Amino acid sequence: MTEDRAKPPSGSARDPFLDRCRAIVGPDHVLAGPDAEPFLTDWRGRFTGRARAVVLPADTAQVAAVVQACIAHRVPVVPQGGRTGLVLGSVPDASGSAIVLSLRRMQRIRAIDVANRTITVDAGCILHDVQQAAADAGLLFPLSLASEGSCTVGGNLATNAGGTGVLRYGNARELCLGLETVTAQGETWDGLRGLRKDNTGYDLRDLYVGAEGTLGIITGAVLKLFPQPKAAITAFVALGSPAAALALLALADAACGPALTGFELMSDTCLQLVTTHFPELPRPFPARHPQYALLEVSSHESEAHGVALLERAIGKALDDGIARDAVVASSIAQSRTLWALRERISPAQAKAGKNIKHDISLPISRIADFIAATDARLDAAWPGVQVVCFGHLGDGNLHYNIAPPPGIAHEAFLAQQGAVNRIVHDSVAAYGGSISAEHGIGALKREELARYTSPVALGLMRALKAALDPLGIMNPGKIL
Image (tube, rainbow, N blue to C red; front, top):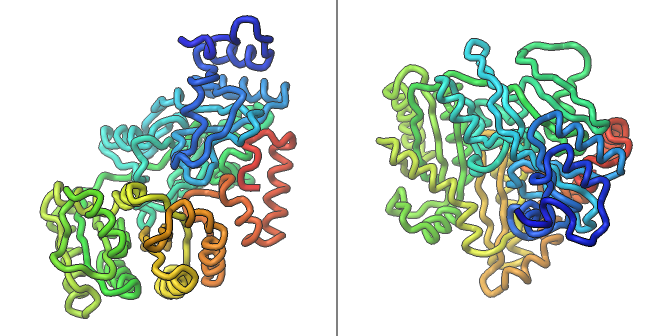
């Protein structure tokens, strides 16, 4: 145990606020100095804030008591889960005035109701652990993200996370039936009800889902579970254009219906990045193609049924000239390899160098036109610019990332982020989209939200913030 963590250094003045926090959570769970540093840097390693301390409560009662201490001493609170966000939503600013309230000690699976198909969990539960607990009960929790081994349920709900299963199961909001939250007044609202229908007044749950900890702190949740499919069948399809991908999506949706649980798009640029930086992953086709789609069909009847559905859809796409080539996974290992080609895109980008990321959504029908128009505008501004475009085509969510042209250093290109964002976000607005699909606003997109959101909507958001957090201590500087 370091001296920083347990008590102030010898001879220094006592801090009554931190003494109160130590009394609540125990001296080992109020961190300062080097022990606090891992909690202060964002996931991408681009920003490190400062904090008065990092406080780690063990349960909801301790969270409420810490918030009450923050109210008494007027100390801001930055709630934190797995710290996997990409918009600076869960790290403190540079002032050092706030505490980080990490929920990583709160990892209980509180209950599983098999008949009601629900699981009740602490907000600090790792997403993968929730998936595993559901599987152990013979059920499925379908939220799936690249960071599922470290992100938490509270963070997933605070940002309304999406992932690869939104086409069939919806975002985190749709997977949540009830919440437990600690309010900005230090009170606990117990809304842990596993009801599919509940029209008793305002939907308080939806106020907190997607609010990024700016209205209160999610401490527990009741989540929907689903029957485990008998089989999940994966296919990788070569395409000539994003328009062809949209045609394939329509065909697969018509042929497979609700059995179509995943439809991912990636460009050849993405695939080349992955196979360059992860050479152990085999290329699915001998020739290169402009675009690729990764499809998953989940069958509740049998593997043969799932294969038949997928092969029928792909066969028609090949016959109609929509698809150029295709491979259907013949084993679990091959399916995992095909998914790895999609999931390794972001790590491959990190290995290649820094880039400018955009998490956007668009009407599905306008995605192909958006890509063509925005690619052209960026290339006109920075000839040879590399667009790394991939995402969840089935729900209209693109990760539209921009890397510098050859010969331009990554750091120099990052200095152009404001100009790049303006082109991309103006185009998103022109095509009726959103500048944030599944990562939230945080501090990184706060000014962009103000630019692209109507004054009426911003006024309503500010009124909610003022009503629920009148002292402004909940995750200040985020969203608004």
